[in-house]
Image (cartoon, rainbow, N blue to C red; front, side, top):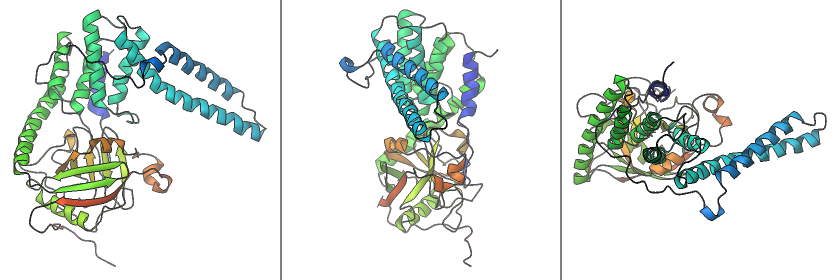
Length: 416
């Protein structure tokens, strides 16, 4: 049987896969591998509790309430007053209230477990498992992705490793290498490569073998990230790249456009913004931890401005996909138009396939607040059933260079 770590390695290399495109497709973000040195056993600052300690219930108290509600819900389901419509409505309403209460208790349970873990010299196995699950939920994009928060996941992973260094084994079911691997994934998601390497070194200290692809992908990401940082430093010195402000229903996003590397894509984008193309446009595909996509009038991933533009994905000068990058959606070479997406984290399989033409310089917190819209089921195929879209209210060019910005069109739809 595979070890837990090996299963996680396989899962991580595949779970960040998602197909879409105009039909854009958010593809695999294989998990990378290390390159720096950190002491993760350093003293950790206490993580903030969700409510004042004096008012907080203990982990055991919250768990007791949650389990009692689950028992009641099960009992109510088995005793539904069939044949009495009015009583049945009241009955189901009671079940719904209990379900909502337990959704709230789940959040309280995590906070209470984290507080107990920090305060206890020897936390219980149940508390340890709950805290470990916090890490998993904050990096797992294979389910809903609603809780995607890799920074918090990394903090909790460091906290658990520091506690393990102090007291030894936390639980028979939780191994150091499992915690470190989850921390590795969390660090990768925010380009925190020194911490990612440190996590891998903790795994190696346990004499656990990693798949070679993990290290190879990691080193490739580190190399490209260092190159990206050099470019950003030069851009900060010149301070003249075009910028666009997206005022959305969830807040403001400011993007800077890579005109030096993708002048045709930037020319098209600024042209569309100045012609109010993106105003009132929905984010029709939002998958936390993966991508947030907009720029399609019909919300189905098939819309365009009436023409196609060329890709700018070849050569040594192209940019790569990291958290906050803007890329053109396409269904193949030279099929982009108006649809673009923002990456939540490294998307290496888009490199060389989707044109990177900018990055978020302010407002990633807004990006993470965008309402989730699945690419599967009826929400995308039947957009009328989705009334929960986040949208761009207005898009405004706030800075550009002193020349005209026009699209380079490959094909244009003939008007009938």
